[in-house]
Image (cartoon, rainbow, N blue to C red):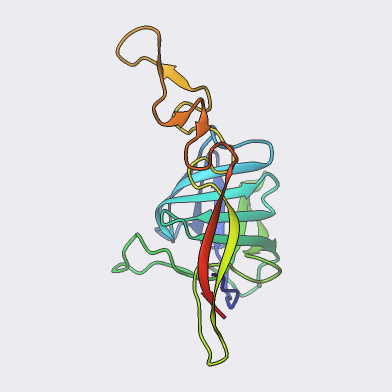
Length: 213
């Protein structure tokens, strides 16, 4: 179930192996930080995991050139973003969690402006990232009109457990790990011969949902 009626944007600052939502000068907006996961990252995607506007255990899946971003919440809601030029009057994130707002919030709209440290210590602003086709953000929501009806929609998504790698996150696809209590190895109980148990090693899962449209 998709929604593309969105506006606004987020600034993201990258610093070494972490990233966080910030204002246009790189000052954090108190959403926490996400740390790069080298086990899940590859030449195509860079994975960061941690706290963000969408709550704890959020995953940021950037394309290697940071032109696109997929946000995956702990509730498995998925948001798609695309890099664009930031508005000149946009000074901070459009989505800022209020002090009394629970950290598990997974709703919201808007795009992302990516900041990377410049060589001289300043900030290079890359532009807004919005989801979907153009200035849109894909989220789980629905609306109804008298002309609409329920129907089943099946879609394929990146596996939230292995983040598209197809490998078990516990043993990194080996099917075993070193015995923490002695020598030798122990067969991994969280996978099938190194393949992610949730997606069976395909890196994707299929979801069928009812849509009212």
